[in-house]
Image 1 (cartoon, rainbow, N blue to C red):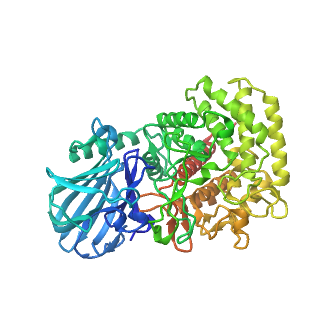
Image 2 (cartoon, helix red, strand yellow):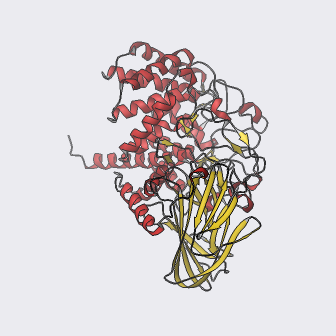
Image 3 (cartoon, rainbow, N blue to C red):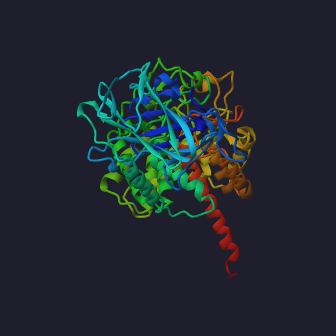
Length: 622
């Protein structure tokens, strides 16, 4: 049975990610890419769908008072990342002693000329002697394909179709019931390395990894990467861990950043709101660039900007809301019927049918991101402005069309307020580009469009009786996306409609300091988003509220909310998409880039405000 979502940490090599449970089991791993078929899929099923366990076999000696982690059948357990790295360390204390398991995936530039994915697990004896167990259940095709397994020359290999994995380990494994297992004892000072290498089956046997050298080089890589961070404020630990997580979710060959490492982790446990997030969303464009540029990661920002330009190139009418990690457009959705789903949350979906939706906000996201990259001094090309002109020409004809909105509702298309605001953003940024002399264009026409869109939104998207901007024209329901109105510059933060909207959302969409995306009326769900059931509070929206509070002058409350939100991170600093206040659990795909982008943005905004306040207090009188 899979653990709680917050029980999983990640390791990764910037092309794929593995989820490692606090019980010592790797329950999710897709190879060779984020969006490839999983070879360990127990996260969405059972052990028979693939996993790799290394953990003590003995019962616990005692619980550890005040420590993070937990006590279970295999001992008292705690875990952490080693410094500012993605090297995970899990420590168990048992009746016989203590043992540490170090898990990581070396960057592929360090795995040889074939750049193959490698998972390294090093078992270290800390004190005493601990009996350990390991179980390797190899499955391809999301747990559906049992490979052909062979032993030879001290290695175990498993192959089926295009895939093969190769295990090198210092102990003898016994095969039974299409699984391989062993027990062994590790004593103080011993180090036993296990490595699992992936190789396309037609390419034959990979070289044997050198796990100890890989540990040193992986640690050096992450330490060196973090040393480039220019943020050193009071929230450094949270910001740096979020940046490391975002780097892990970046597909290094192209610069694309996936929304999450998983598919079908439910927004509503036991329900149908289960989506595949292993793709790159345009809605992340500006947040991604802002987070990277404001923390010193210009190269990563430029790689993301290049990915963005390649992905959306072509007919502006064909711009999608998401793409594959290399810019793939066809992400057809299907269901893995043999997988029961995380805690019976079915169906398990592979691919995402929302790729075919019309979301007009993405045009604003792309143009806003390209404008930000220009103002930040990233090198541009003639192609960049030509692309923007084509997008603007299309949007000029279609901004008033209904769409599916930011949240990818599967109900009817509507005149979503956020989509109109983002259309305004597109034309506003274009006006700024022209009027500051960067590029030529019809700025007067675009300025007129900005004024027209703003008038329409304020007339049809603002409910005077409620005192709030609503989800779509004519609606009474709220939408947390309108919290971005002052951040985007659509209206000033001190506009009474903005202040009132923030306060209404704070009153009606918030539970335990957490913000839901929009209101779900049980009697009208099918009319709003076409789905049954509920969902947790959306963590990115909760950070947006903290931002909006700060912008509207409620700085103390903003800081209090932000620090409250930090408490929902896991013991290793990760956030999924949502949090279920009723169950007291993280829900949704994990780790979620959108949540970590928003965390970084809010931390930096609060820090900038505090610094400005300090400078004002110490400024000499005029």
